[in-house]
Length: 260
Ligand code: PGA
Image (cartoon, rainbow, N blue to C red; front, side, top):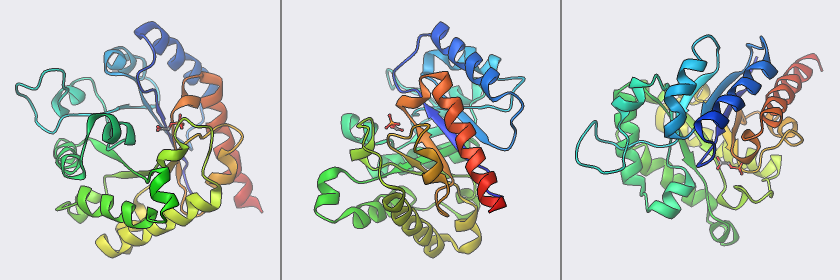
């Protein structure tokens, strides 16, 4: 049975107190549900406190970004060792906001992925096209290039410890979700690329998430597609009730699919 993988990307929201309240709501809301893999990615300032709150739960902790060096004169940056220090298990890399506002290239993202893997952090690697690229019908080319360049020199064994997130830029924070068919079309393409690059076993094991305006009322249709293993949720992860509802709806959809 597919185990839904739901990650919450809180972006630049939540003070420490707000973050703690949000985690308490999520913990209370999901109760003992264990069939779902849940990762929350608070801002850096809240990681340490949230890490403590997660010690007795199966929710996992992720960061939203990371520098590829372990230490050095990089003012304002955070290293993989610092993330390990606060017990992060995951790190989002290559998010389109990092690419767009901070000029991150595929080559730089590739360096980060390599260091993350070296220090046993699981990268959630984001790919996805802009609206202009989709309108020019170059979305498959763009995603292939992002995959080729950002996964350069990553071995099969390392690849087993990664998660991919397809996030079409035009769907992020816009309320305009990709249709389940559009998402499935790209995600089955990503699965095919992984198959070509790393073989069937690895390709079959990597969770491929969809991200872009995921809400409680659209998760069910998305998760029922064969190549959508879960979601990377931005805006809707900032309200505990919404995030919990997304998890519950994903889980019920999978169970309903099994019975039908
Ligand atoms: P959104 O963001 O759910 O607010 O569209 C998704 C993301 O950026 O990861």
